[in-house]
Length: 368
Image 1: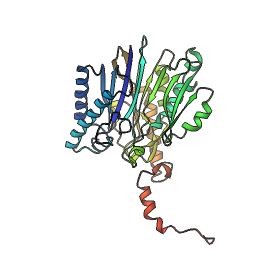
Image 2: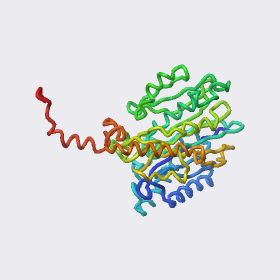
Image 3: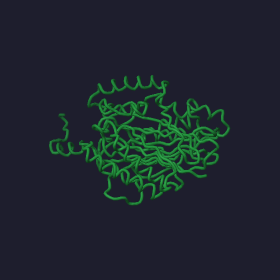
């Protein structure tokens, strides 16, 4: 059977500040999705959180970009926003950038990653969720999973993977897309995805038969709203095994807490810390940025799980290193590279400051 896995998230209110999701919002979301199961719209679901983001993980047979599924998500977020406002939670409804549902939540604020696939004899899937960072945060990890033989031994020794993969990359500024073939175009793609604020990997498919391997959300809130309203906090779906990277190969990139943009006010670089779901409650300087990964076996559309994969003790050193990096970066204060470059602050207060002091800026003379 063909199964669709939809992961749709939104920040509808933090508790307290930007650190967590209130239990009442989780309960409300579960109530809405359970009704959808009872009404045969969904096969199964799992509700969780990463930081202050409410995460809806759903299976169904409606395909990608289904209006009914997106409306279900929108209505769920709206209902949770109502509760968030009653509780005076911080930033209540901040990711809902439109007043009404227009057929698709893409472009309306929530982050979306969806994939439709024919279930294999065994279909392990990992859903990664991040907080206090942007969609380009997945670029490095996806490259390692699907294109780096030093991370993924299957690229060398698994005949089904040996021909490589096709990466679809989006230019989120110019709204364009391109496909790169791995490994022959690896250097060319790296030249782009090393600028994760603009060039974002959307999906990865096996080159031999275009079997889907991974799909990420690429929504940029500031580009939609025209101002800073919170970081994008992306989601990522990765299928594992049987001609795709093994589970351990998919998880290993997060053993290195690489730097990502986001953290405090979405304006700082910080280490991406792998953690358990219970620890996905960023606090220090609203961070550091967090990533969680929960695993499921997909069986006739049912979500068998979850397993809290990044809670494993093998990531303890990564967490320690992330804290050390956070110490180092935070000591820079308002200076780069802790603070993002000027071009990445165009949706913060910087444009207002530049306009305010524009008249006092004088041309340099030869004496200067």
